Image (cartoon, one colour):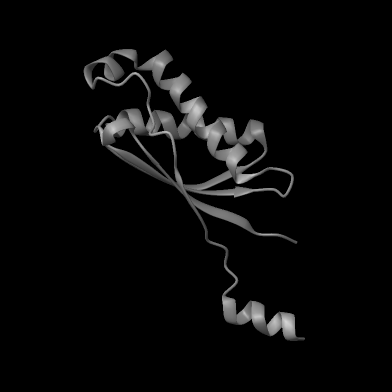
Length: 119
């Protein structure tokens, strides 16, 4: 049994406000297809103009780095293909900052884990 749930945050390059509700919704649908094809899950997404929050679940054979790079690279491809004018208007030649925030967010508390380890 495993719970490899992560909170991931991507910021647009220069924190430029890019995402409208319709663009954000289209990206969400695209990312859900990517996740299915790559074998991970996106449980929740929030897209605001200059950044994205996602809760992702991965399997042990996949690293969180692999998951994050897949999302970042596929979003870059999606935006260049479907919304190139939006990227030009906001002055972006790349969609994301070159890093992302990742934190674990499993449901097991430290106290529960310590109790389990003692037994």
